[in-house]
Length: 482
Image (cartoon, rainbow, N blue to C red):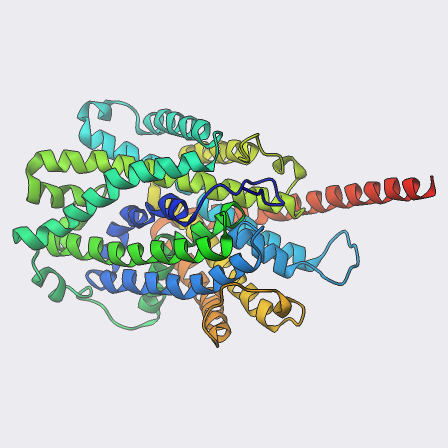
């Protein structure tokens, strides 16, 4: 086993990478209700298109992740691609700023997800144990959040392979039973096609400007869940054989996502109908399970979903921490984040993520979709910049020389360019619109406020890294003279 150049350890193969991301289809859970509320049964098509979008993008991202095997997925290779290659040592460099901002936006995608699923867990627990309703919901969020975040931090400190084992355990006890639950209505006769064909779109639907913005906004919400299986590429520096393991993990995870996202949404709408889903804003899967297996089945599915949320929190912890670690290595965050523990885990970044999520629980108490809306804005910037990086990697004479053990199909650069333009300005405008429609300006202000925080951090980091480079140069010159 060899270690990568950035302090992370090459300890996993493609199967472990898949296991780390196998819980991704369950990221649909907080989005079932809002997508159904706005689009009715057409939301099924939305989820299918979102996963297909993920496939198209991830073919490009997989190529770049393998071309830069020591970079941590999107945050790593975008910083590598946009950095200056003219040999001039500048304190402030435009390419570092672009790549670093992409890494920061990527962190904003994954880090708030912990708070999202902590709130969802608390909602499920109140449904399972009604006595918990007597506890103030914010207090319950903070108690459960502290327990989960500390427990997963301890697990993470032992190394990535232990997280993969957790993924296997939780994946088996959640994904397979939930697949059975969502398939059950088709077998028991509780699935009614009329709930889909008669309610494809809201009765007042017209293709005007407001509804087009609504669709674009829903695409932003959907891609937060349905495209995030690119997370398995973040572990590029930790695969035994990145050129083989990474593409296998990406496409195996994508195939599972395509099946599960469409299946879950179809099953829930077919079994409950639009009104039935809107009547269950916390856990629409619970009445589906109760139809097939009785009230006991409903309770069982809540326990399974709690386990699923723990897995998703673990994924967000790991991905967010590696984004910060990668940015620090490239000099785009303070070097304090570079240090890892003896098992190669960036524990300082994990500590910051935990504190950030506890703050989010206080600021946006009880509303997981509002927090999701914040991180969804981050993904728009991430995908736009990462797809632009793919275009640059194919057009830049120097970058074109880099060996690519895996390549996307010929002509993919034009598809990547089209998707980048779709992200900005179109999906960005749609995301801002849907956030304003649902939550006023709160989610937009927090999202853009956190994104803007990067710039003073970046300036500090550039001053820090420039001073370190000058100090090393001075020491080298003294050595040469002596």
